[in-house]
Image 1: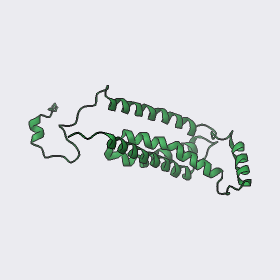
Image 2: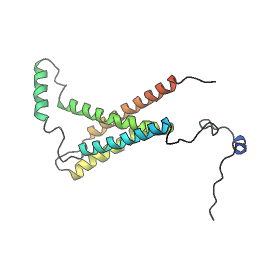
Image 3: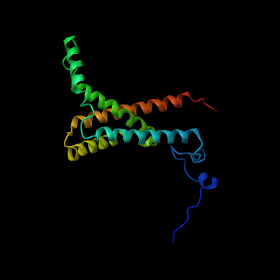
Image 4: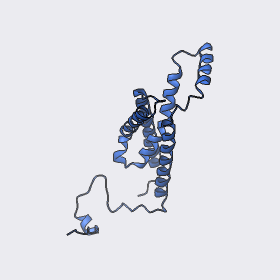
Length: 179
């Protein structure tokens, strides 16, 4: 026999000790037409589109920069001849591109998660990136897995997470205080 849950009444809420993070009287349901809900839907849609684009890039049978490899190396040679240090090389550019590619993952995921779980975003990105590298190693003979890619992808997601925290703090601080 299943029981139907009873809705909370003011008397029930009044008899409960206050919870430090949840005020049941001030919580209102998110309706589809509210700006908050529209923002969440937009963020979720952007995240889904981002994941599709990343999947195409990382699961392409050959590295996506293969066609530009020669041009990048020529530009780097010219820069090195002009005095740019040798440590500024192809590997640094590739790692930087991986960081930048994963910033949106951290940003969008952190914006969607409840505040108590946002800090887990980089850990989720670590798992996601590890899965990508495993797929490249297992299924794409023209690609190779790299532990360095996992770390720089995770760094990019961590940067995105910090940006999400900064954005949310900015939004919180710009709201007028009503008493």
